[in-house]
Length: 169
Image (cartoon, rainbow, N blue to C red; front, side, top):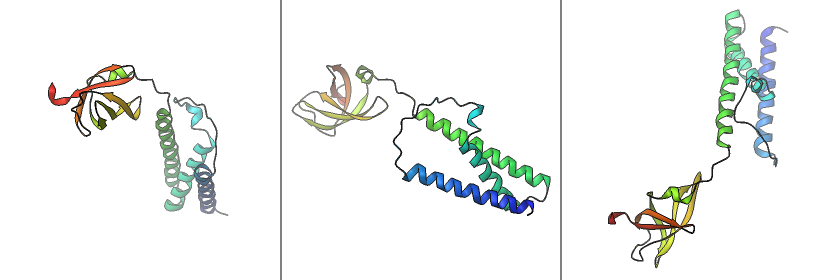
């Protein structure tokens, strides 16, 4: 068995494990609570997934480019390392999305312009970005307003936003 055969089997084996990992991640119901830190250290590069991605990059680059010289082997190693670095970057971005949100105060919305989604007889709702996600908030205002009007939030009382017509200011 020569070196090219070994690299080919590494590429096939790592591809099989990668596909298996994807199937388990997406199609097997895993209900677990994971606690993690968004900061990543050197030890995060040396994990099962990191090793698997290195072998994927190294193996397939070795198969495509050949491993008949030191330069081609070093190129395959560099591509494997690049796969690990990209994996670490993606994990860092995904983990930062899962950081705990700060709870926003409704008073921070004062001055914001938004569209009335429903409004009848002086009260209704608006859809607005609040506390890190889009939410529907109750509003009160001039009974002459109607759904679809663009309004400005001028106050907040007891969890209800007070709005006025944008044109009145």
